Length: 301
Image (tube, rainbow, N blue to C red; front, side):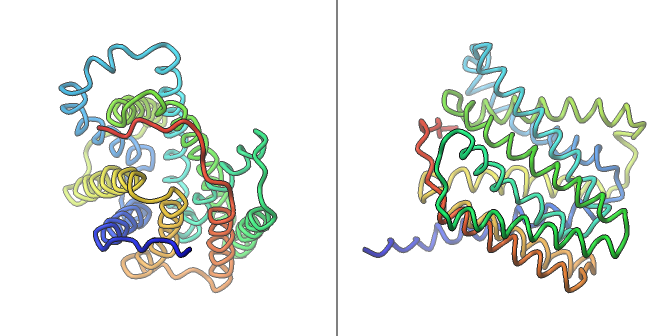
């Protein structure tokens, strides 16, 4: 039996979500603001925008969070802070295309966590993981010929991919009993607080930037941080998680094209080989890997 076709409205939402998340890397790479400060404001502004809804509609839930629930959410926020701190830093050291592709390896780490917990992975999914990691090696090898700085950027993106995978796994556990609004409000707030402290320790100023930079920070907050992730979370009620995961992978070519168009970043030809391997490998992992059968999360806002 063939799969049902996606409704035009669903395809439209997928397109909006892909464009929104694809803007993240190119926009942040173009900012003349320290990486930790960008990460702080991205999470801080999102927390402020969520605050009215959280305080009006979810005050009782937030105030009644158990120690275990709060612990899961805070741990998720810590992982999110590490993710942004490392990944956004990598954008100033290596190409947007390479950094975005490597950070998308989060799917591989989540699949590895599933395997560690006894979930069998089909041979094709394992082959996809191997292909994706070969792609990282190819990109890193090409960047080594460019500069040591680019390789360090690749490694920071790799750390960012592990952190965001942990954020996903831990957040999935927290979301079993906590609504989207309460979870994101506390999680983003935790990440913002940690990134603010990290920025100050690093000696970076939180203010004093020009209007152009503030406009781009607001843009990436509204698009990638709120719109993109919210659209994909909403789509989980309409289509299978495997389709959502495949759509998110389109961020790799999307970010590469936007970086080439607006930043003039055209990576060496060898990088495109690595990008293709990562994209194909992750697609195999998503398609061939087992669907999630965990207890469903609370989806209302």
